Image (cartoon, rainbow over all chains, first blue to last red; front, side, top):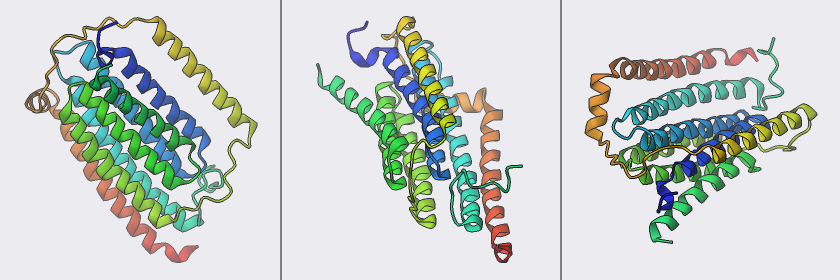
Length: 107
Length: 170
């Protein structure tokens, strides 16, 4: 246990796993598609925080975790843009975005 | 407790509270506000991990772009929070309990496993080093990210055009 609280890797990893399971619980719990997209953003942020914490505490002499976190940010931006355009099309077609009632593309 | 540790605990509280609000809030606008709070908290944690560049990128990309995109979508669709009843299907309750059990197991493993890191090592990866990495070794992923963004933009435009053409169908 180091002297300062923020020089301990376990706290960052715990926050990352908390974000991951908040996101998974949101994916199960939410009914609307936008709520599920918000949960996806939480999962991606947990992954980024995990990478940065591991990079800081395990191998502090290179910056690959930082680069991968920036790549995750780019993927999240592209994913949310595509997902929101699809959600808007679904809302125009069905007049709602309840994920349980969209059954036309299911089978 | 020093003032740095208090601010650190405040960032962690903002992250966790924002995540819980984003998941369990009744209104979708409140969920978006919780998401923005969690993203600011994570930016604070990045500052404590000696990554001010990444904290700025977090605020610019996530808070400035993605959250505003979600806000635009909510404003376009209307915040229809009709009859929100949580777990109606028992299968969903069972899956939620499974998720909680797995999270408890992982947390216990985190507690028991002591991560052998060196907290006092010098970690100063600057934006210059990051640019070096992207242009020396990670050239292909960098270019693939730009290709992915172009494809996403063209795909969003094509989806909006095709939905405008097929508006009279239904």
